[in-house]
Image (cartoon, rainbow, N blue to C red):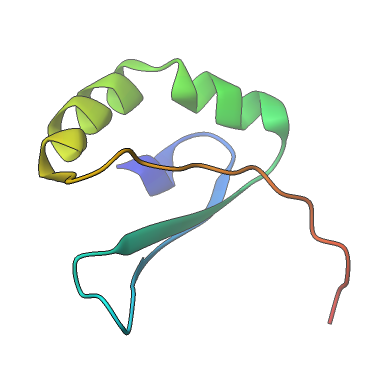
Length: 70
């Protein structure tokens, strides 16, 4: 469902190799406005409410800019 959100170009789920209880998501959005619209959406609220019940610790989130292109 998240991948079908306006502006979501990519969404991937990763698991830490050393600790199988650690997961990361990596997403790429067309622009900051699309990401903010998703963060303010009902889908985000519903997904986050369900997902955070699985956390053992405080989650971390970053927004980054790509500096080099290949």
